[in-house]
Image (cartoon, rainbow over all chains, first blue to last red):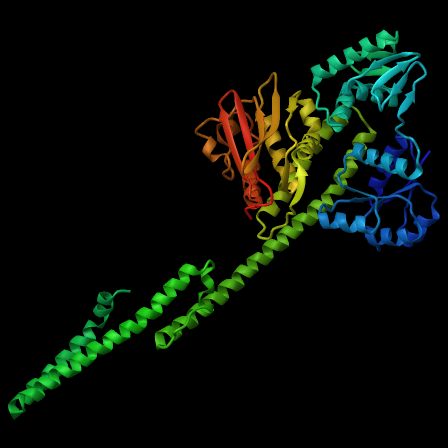
Length: 223
Length: 337
């Protein structure tokens, strides 16, 4: 499990961010004092740092620069400044990514995942996901079971992948839509229904139709 | 200034000279003075006076013509005092002095307002910067506590974010400095980003999104365009019909420009309202009937920002059928600013 250090001076923000990241499967460390920030950061063992630019006593950009002298830990800068200059400065000081408040939380999550994947060489998004009953081949957009291979469309793949990631939990239609929209498939209610129906039909070909269950008024669940 | 007008001003002076010389001549009459001398006494001073008047006219004329010409050339007319010359008579010197004082006080005044506007803009930007923190916190709380209540709060937070963004761009649009940065971007990225930003309300309103042919590259400040698109898309949502809602977005390439079309199938805009949609505070029939929330700021800002970016914006509509907003990007590197 990857460990993320949150360096943010707004108490509530860092706490809520912590809760959110914990929910999404990360271990969290939160810096509470900002007197000896750089040393405090270095003392923690962490895989990634979320760093606010405006900290008491010190500038996040400066911290980033100092940190880079001794450590290669990935850093995502969080800021409410929007200007290009700030972005360029932060990236010059060695930050790996840059998000502006109020951030889209799912984009932040995606950035964290991709940074960790790159630096730790962990396959967070594997080419293939083994789901026991079947194998989801993401790079080829296929479901594989034994010798049978079924092609999935772009949307079907995304929906199934999302269900797989949230396996055992009820996923609302809104959440699926939201996920699809974030990945730039702007589907409407009808298209989603059609996509899910087709996905089920394809699952039926390998006798797995019952795997995706409809929870009336709540959404879908991959059992 | 023409000669006749100038002469009118000098006529009393001339008449008094004539009167004086004739009086002298009349007094001299009884003393048997030579007629030639009398004629001389009468006419020579008069002629000399006329020549003097004419020379004065020439001098003043050349001065005022010069001032006129310079005034015409100057963009900022209050800088006149810096370019006045040929001040070789007393009124001109005085005039130059006055103009210089006026100009100075004017510049001081303008600077005062420039400064206070800059301060205000800086305050707004700082305020926006500050308010983003509590908004981030609220959004995280919502994310961590997903239910019907927080979902409804999220919609309102999205609205607040939009209003804040509007305020930010309002401050930017009325700023005299150019604070945008032109970069190469594809329309696809820009459009996708602005759709994603309005994701919640678009999904909520059950609007069908149809984006295609967006591979054109434009040179612009994408943040500004995303803001403009946000305003347009929010209008599409606000003035949509009840069923089969649709927004179509695509681009087309022309010789000199690239046009981005945002077409909805909403209630449309009355043709008598169309020419005024970019006016500040104009809400029109739609604003009065459909939504009391129209502020008449959104499109006004769009137009202003487009002007600053050297772009065109146009809105066409068929009442009850469709509204089409067109953004026109200048092509290539020949930018018009």
